[in-house]
Amino acid sequence: MLVVGAHGGLGEATSLACAQAGASLVLLGRRVPRLSRLHDRLQALGAAPALYPMDLEGASPDDHADLAARIEAAYGRLDGIVHLAAAFDGLTPLELTDPAAFARALHVNLTARWWLTQACLPLLRRSGDAAVVFAIDDPARTGGAYWGGYGLAQAGLSAMVGMLQAELGDAPIRVSGLLPPPMRTPLRARAHVEAEDRIARAPADVAAHCVALLAPGGDAHRGALWAPFAPEGRA
Image 1 (cartoon, rainbow, N blue to C red):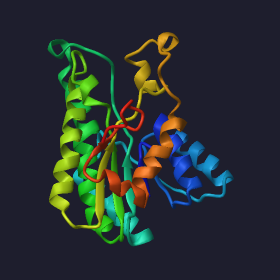
Image 2 (cartoon, rainbow, N blue to C red):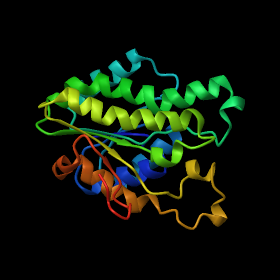
Image 3 (cartoon, one colour):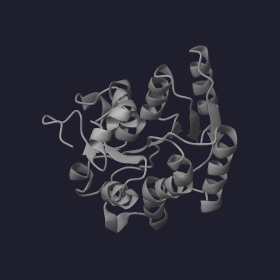
């Protein structure tokens, strides 16, 4: 199982939950010290994760292809990817957004996620039941004013889930999107005052739902966006 953004708030919680579920993990992140600390924590629990340091902002398609080749050499196949890496600098009017920051938000949150997934599709096809899970910040909220490139990327991810699943057809690959509730993470703190943010949940509360989508039971949400914490639990 490949966890992208493994040392972030939801990434770390999901890595722990996947390890507890018995998954063999490849942990991808850009900060080596944080990856190493997570590795040590998982190792203390009896897991043996592999680490793959990579900065999605600067990685080229060739870098993603190299990642896939290394996974192939080590494991022969890939049973799942969960995309949890995100880049968000804060709320800014589009008119005042730095062009480089706008491009970075679109790339890290959308383009890089696709490049990585595309590179790994042949490995995913070798699994009898593979899953690709995209964590998506609800476009109903991030499509409003000041969310900039980050908000536009969330809308693109939402469209990509259904598009990719439709194109994969009967391939043994399930694609789904998880719409997490507000969480107590550094990313959310850039848009909300933590002391007044009483509705945010701990990432550990959400991690089990990432595992559920990666597991065979996640087939119920194939090609759909799942908001398990919404009042109606919509999909």
